[in-house]
Length: 413
Image (cartoon, rainbow, N blue to C red; front, side, top):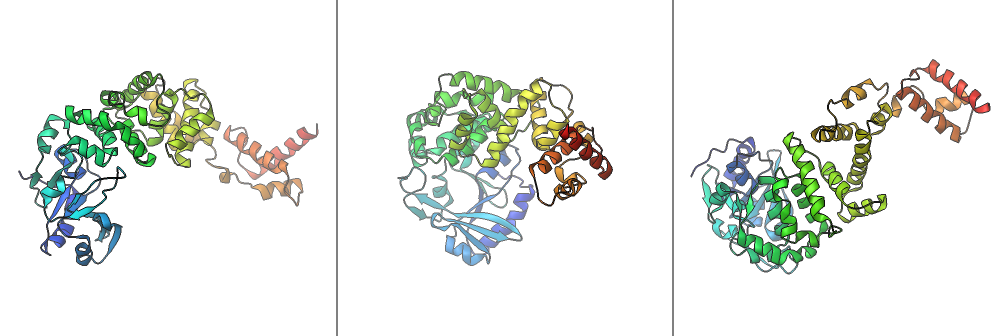
């Protein structure tokens, strides 16, 4: 069957494929871009598979980057865009549960699809939109089924992360997992211990953010996956996930696309960790970056303030506006607050950051007659900043000088 590949990403990439085909090699669009096009979902990137070997790809294109040449992948820079080009290949055993011990390059697309994880990801388009489907992937898409390619035990033994990818796709697409595929997932879930935490975290985040999380979260328990995830083998995991599903469902009902930080913050608040140290340790074990941990911490701090109606100008000033707006959206989705006010409050702030104050530390030292910095300088700047934010002090040289003079008199008293 022929499909219309009107998406601009396909249109741009066609020139890359033409270049490959002009050298008598085959080239196809593969993976997620094919699956999502058939599902009428937006696509975000393009993957191309080719019969050309990595060395041959490098000969065709002048500007390439060796991403994983030994495994068949080369990055091609073409017309100011980058494309991931992977050679058709077959794979041997996976001693490390991730990388094949040996890769054999082949010239046949059908052989290449045998190494794919699920039938819905083993589909390909040629440049004209002709669909190539060797494993019933289109039928599984229509039936909304996640089914491993070939023998599921072999697929999951090759790369245990595929076990998590199965439930991630269920959460994102609203699909069910084929029975044999599910039984193999459950049997080999213990092999998740062999997968790096960073790879698991990426899949876990997508799983948490999935539009159909409330329909698929039970897979985490039923397939025994949670037992092999750090700090999640807690007594009340069922209750945690039940509550989480309700909150995520409410967000999705509002067409709310939430960030990685928000998804983990809500999750963290349901887990039985009482101390800040335990919470931070949990996030560190899950390999979150320091910035993400900071953002999660801020979200966890802000939610109770919203609930208690304690969001004031000082709060709006000191927290990142983007995070405040996201928490406000979350609180609206949970029917805890009705009208948005963060944007109004933010726009009413006399200053948005400390550098907006018309005086600095050197100016304060001059007012105090100091030639060397002292703690009182920092104290005064903090007080000036606070009073300007609360609209109790004008952000002018004269007003601040009067404030400093009054502050010093009060200190003497």
